[in-house]
Amino acid sequence: MIEQDIHKGLAGVVVDYTAISKVNPDSNSLLYRGYPVQELAARCSFEEVAFLLWHSELPTPEELAEFTHRERAGRHLDPALKTVIDSLPVTTHPMDVCRTAASVMGARHPLAGGSSREVNLIKALDLFAAMPAVVAYDQRRRHGQDQVAPRNDLDYSANFLWMTFGNEAAPEVVEAFKVSMILYAEHSFNASTFTGRVIASTLSDLHSAVTGAIGALKGSLHGGANEAVMHTFDEIGIQPEESRDQAAARAAAWMGDALARKNKVMGFGHRVYKNGDSRVPIMKTALDKIAAHYGRSELLGLYEGLEIAMDEAKGIKPNVDYPVGPAYHLMGFDTPTFTPLFVASRIIGWTAHIMEQLDANSLIRPLAAYNGIEERHLRE
Ligand code: ACO
Image (cartoon, rainbow, N blue to C red; front, side):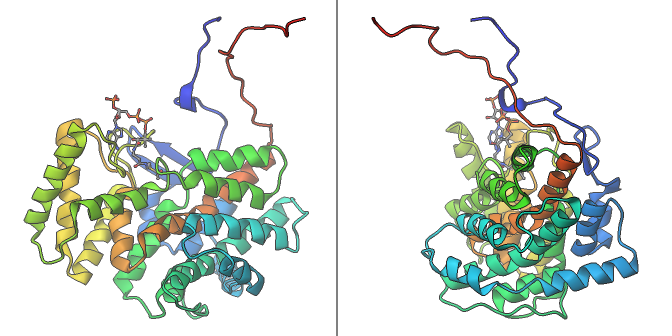
C-alpha cells in the first residue's frame, strides 16, 4: 500500500472560507460576524443575533420589527405536523422527533422546490420560528400534557419557556435561556454544520441539509453531550439538601474513579479549544444566577468538583455543554430535551452556512486511501 497523508477525522484540515463566525482557540475567542459572542449575549436579543448571522449586520429597528413580526407569526404548531408527532411513541427520543419534524416541515413547505437565497431565508425563518413549538410540545406530551399556544407578547426565549411549562419564567431564567441560545447558535465548521454543508453542496434542499445536521448533532461526541452531562450528575447523585462542599467532594471522588477506569467524561474537551471553550465563562455566570434563584448551590458543588478534579488530573477544560446541562435541568427541561434545545438554536448557524455554501458552491467530495484486498478475480 502506498503511504499517504491521512487526515483522520479531518483534524486540522481547512476545508473552505467562512465569514459567519471566527473561532480562535489561541485567544479563546468566538466572533459572530466580527462581534465577540460575549458582547452579543450580554446586550442583544436572540432574534437580533439570528438576524446578524443570516444578514451579516445587526438589524435596524425597522428590520427588527419586521423580523420579529414574521417570527411570531410562525410560532404555531402546524396541526398536520402535530398529527405526525402524535403518531410517534412517547418513548421516541426527542432528537428523533426533531429530525422527523424538520423533514415534515420541508416536505410540507409551500416553497419546497425553491432554493434561491430569498426562498432559503424564508425557509430558515420558518424553521427557526416553528421548532420551539415542536420541542415544547414533545416534552409536554411525554408528561401527558397538551400543547400550550404561543404568546405573541413574549420574545423568543420567554415564549419558548411559556410553551414548555405553561407559566411565565422569572427574568433571570429567561436571560439564562437566551444566553444559552445565543452561545449555541453558531460555531464554524463543527460536525453538524459540516454535515449540513455537505448535503447543501449536492444541491439538495435546505430542509434536507438541516435534517442531516440534526442527525449529526444527536451524537454524544457532539450536541448529545449536554444530555450526557446530566447523566453524569445523576450517576453521582443529585442531593438538593447537601452543601456545596459536600457535593464537590463527592464529584471529585467520582471523577477520580472515572479517569482511573479511562472513561471519557462528557462535557469536557473540545476538538478546537484546547485551553478552554470561549463560551463557558458566560454560561457559567448564567448558571450561577439561576442556581441562586432556585436555591440550588449543591449543583454548583457537583459542577466545580468535577471541573477541578478533571483539570488537576488531565488539564482538560469543560466545553459549553457542561454548564448548559445543569442550567436546563434547573429550568425544568427533561434531560432528553436538552439536545433539541441546541437544535432550536443551531438552526440559525446551520442555515447561514447552507446559504453561504450555495453562494460559492463546490461539491464536497473527499478521497479515501484504499486499504482493502488487492485486485483479484473470480475463478474460471
Ligand atoms: N474525558 C476524558 N478524557 C478526555 C476527554 C474527556 N471528555 N476528552 C479528551 N480526553 C482525552 C482523550 O482520552 C485523549 O487522551 P489520550 O491522548 O491519553 O488518549 C486526549 O484527551 C485527546 O482526546 P481526543 O478524543 O483524541 O481529542 P479530540 O480532539 O478528538 O476530541 C472531543 C474532542 C471528541 C470533544 C473529546 O474531547 C470528547 O470526546 N469529549 C467528550 C464529549 C463532549 O463533551 N462533546 C461535546 C463537544 S462540544 C460541542 O459539541 C458543543
